[in-house]
Image 1 (cartoon, helix red, strand yellow):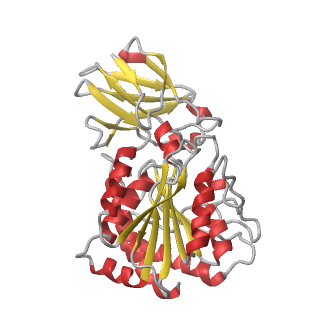
Image 2: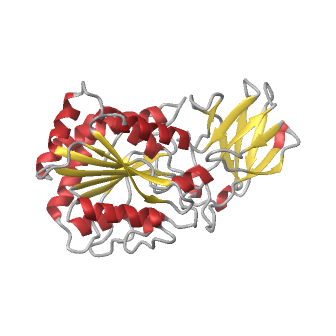
Image 3: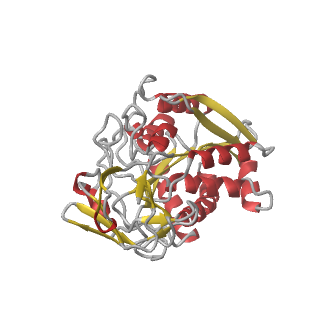
Length: 374
């Protein structure tokens, strides 16, 4: 029996793996940070045995409330993921599972690999409507890929969609895959109409280093990128430095920042109520987007979410606030759960890549419904 995590987005520390009935593990922190919660590892050689994999110190994770009613995902082929029995008690997260084969992967959520990211970007770039730009490099020297979809011309709405500022929130890139698939479907009438009126700027993975390193929230140098938008340092947050500069260059009318939430079992949006000089019309448009998305996809809801910031107290280091303030634009963060959706559950998969992709499809319906207000 062996446990390993020396692969793309792998993260686990082995304390004791001598007995399948009491495997002791812990999660490594993000580099130069105290954040931890993402894990991804492989168990081999335990086919047909009842395994208890105990992740210790789970109470010290970034969001310990995320473990309540949470079930780990597992896969035999790294493609099809399902939920397995998981119990959180006395600071330990315990996975109980009898593997059907001698190789099984466990993860906090279904990973979105860097290979898949490269394939997503390269496949999109083959389309005649798409232009690929490398707008800079990450701390570890990886390309920061930006896809421009549609003809850039005066009068078109400028739509920005970004994902994975927090690398462990892999559902965000699954969602962007759905958006790209629909936008580039020549037989989809709504997408064709959107591209007649809009140009899309899409960055599927803002934080490739953290994704590969198996981080939860930070880049290679331990920076939480979604707190660096006010004054990004090109040495420690080059990802946001280059992205914000490109937004300044191109302009922006609408921004959707895709994320995942550890604790709340809902899909919801967070807006920019606390920014200085709040534009109520833009905020009302963002709320309208939420209502249209709920109408288009019952997996989404507007009743539960984060508490709203008081006027003038919004953190301008966060993308949604900075963008709404900087561009006088409609801006929002869309959060998806690591767990399942309370109101529309699927016990076998919980929230999943497939459902994330479908929600991505539905965002274009909601965008189309509010387009005249942008």
